Length: 517
Ligand code: FAD
Image (cartoon, rainbow, N blue to C red; front, top):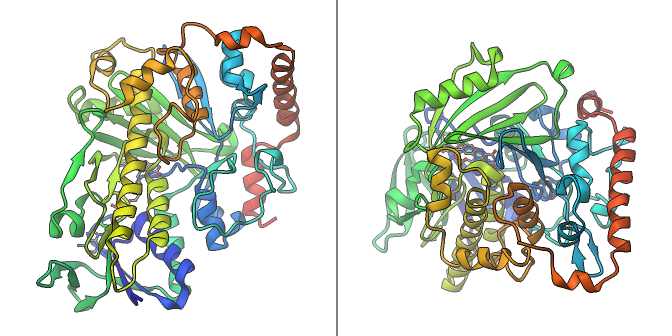
């Protein structure tokens, strides 16, 4: 057995990895985390993916224990604004599509028509519009049926895709890292606040120790690189090549603002908003004390000062005194995220732009897979290869899903948006797009490996984006009785309106959580 793991980097990736490994292996593994006080964390990364719930459950953390400390709020969906045309809105919720007679409601909706696909077929969009909490005042989840088996804490070490938890969270990522650091040290993780000056390798090229400024040499068996975009261990020392996704996803910069708001006056939408702009898109993330916002753009189409001006105009006077954080993004992944005794997790492993909030999801998946593939002193190459395959497939799958967002958005009104229709797409995607122009995606026609997104997400995006829809509904449906499908549409309307009436607003509910209810 290996005894010592050394993690370099104390951002979200470092502390999620450290606490998860400690929870999984307890005292059988010693975990040391070295973090620099001089090198700042990235300072963004506030919206998450619904599997994050499993992470908190795994650590045994209830919402009232960590949410108020991290100014967290609920995220039931992403609200897409202006992706089809100015003024157009649709939601991508954490909600699977119901099926009728073996066909999803997306297939039926194409046949039966309606006002807006997402609101006609799913209940979460109405909750987002009405700024509702996903929980009743007594803490009960709004739709237990959406989460088979209730919302009991689970101890699965793997994202469990058999259930779709109906929400994720927004939180202040720096506060979460701090929270996890306190938790981790109380559970036995050794925290070293120091700079790693050098990384030393033995004659085979394996890392033997890191040299710190004030704490001397720190030795270990396995070294985890959580140093962010710089990839100090994996790229600079192990020389693993980084494969860029830039040809497919050109957004390579962002400018971010932390904007104070009065949530009582403004309310809190329980969703992330992604607003399409001339050369990219702007995220709006409501926390319980402020809004996180940022413009993600491609520098080939927009200069940083123009991006900042656009973002400030978008936010308005509330941002006047707020300092902007300009960020260069490294888009792509390492050829391998695990090389010899070095594993990269977080931005050092790979990143796609934050459009579907997958950065923290990649961290969680990375550490879950590491637990599954954890080595002993034999370092079986199959374990390393299996890990690298899973991580590469997950990132490549999300890359493809994001390419679909741009390629299938009806918008083509600026040079940036025109280019999204002309750019090549990754291998295999053109064929899938062709198939989807006749038949909406299902599990047999989407990217075939686990990447977090299921066929329902592809359906919701295609029907919302509006630029790549089947010419007509499925011929098979003409042979079927549509009574039950019509009844299902009516049921969604009734359920949505009853929930909007019964649920408290998100800000009311979070206030009661913060007061320790
Ligand atoms: P960092 O936060 O960069 O941390 C690096 C750590 O390494 C720091 O602690 C630093 O001190 C340490 N370090 C570096 N060098 C040394 C050294 N020599 N010695 C010791 N320590 C060292 N993800 C989401 O899930 N949702 C989002 O909405 C989202 N939005 C994003 C928006 C943008 C614009 C960007 C760029 C990313 C976004 N992400 C998002 C991704 C998310 O921010 C990251 O996945 C997450 O913060 C993890 O970052 P990290 O810990 O890998 O790196």
